[in-house]
Image (cartoon, rainbow, N blue to C red; front, side):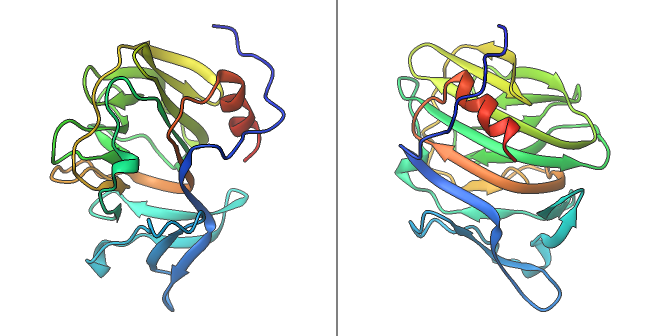
Length: 221
């Protein structure tokens, strides 16, 4: 599918989770105590294990970000029904991520309910491609070093899509993602699938973003 022109803006309609790099509470050595939900819905992300929290950096290739070590760093948002979706429901997850290098194996970037099936989320698969995980995994474009915008979209009752830097790179069938587990950033609960890299923004919408809206997000870091 040809990339359309970018939408002029993206409405906050049905935006249920929004983490930005300037809404982070840190301690004296920049360890993240919690990542504040910009929407102020009390869906903050943290980890009870201080040693497993990411660090915040003020300037990573031009922007602030949270750096995850790929060993155990992660942040979690407690289960919320607004973040759980059946196959007939639409939702979107948009992320800005930076990788210094590409490593092998499954790597969870933003995942929901991996320990309590059915789950959904954004992974790097063993072939080094971005993937919409959960149900039948849908592969997208090969991961590259540097900043990338990745977005997974479920059009309820129709299909799932994977976008990378605004391009539609994969599509497949819808699936249920309404498990009761927590949402993790930087890994997947109950598995050793930790992400090594950095994240500057996470958005979750309870609607399907249009391709033009995805292009806008990819062109407006």
